[in-house]
Length: 184
Image (cartoon, rainbow, N blue to C red; front, side, top):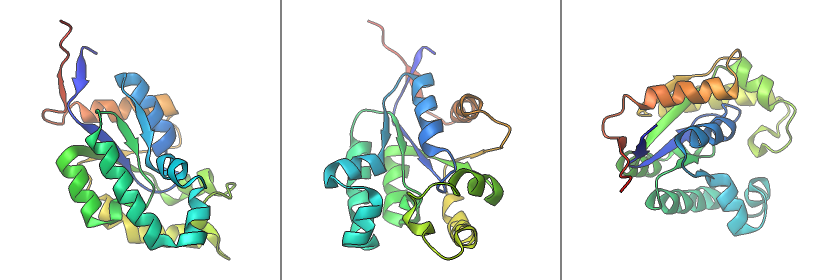
């Protein structure tokens, strides 16, 4: 591709939708940096997201998440993976719409559950019935995710590479996202 990004691509969606894995592959396809907002928070706090939740609470975490997101969006264009709750905040949605392009990696409950059920790194799923919790989160968050500028449907049959290629194809329809690379 002889084009370059004019602004960052911000992947949003539920835990397990593939934001990190697909985001890494999209960044590789576009030859841009990949950044994970949760990882950036963990680096700054020197503890895991789960530990920040326990020690400081969700409100504190969400405030740091917004700060990190703004810092990443102000940097050079790349692919940014966000935590599942980041796009719920109107301020974050406005920031992303102004400085980037939001992409919802949409996945159904069964696909999400198959991907997250064996992981103990999801603080919001530490409940008596984690699948019911995941279903409730999905139902509550879908109206927010649906506000994303681009929606890409995930499917169990798609490999990470195939999903990344699907995302890039959808992004090519976004006006002004890709600009001619100046090779001079």
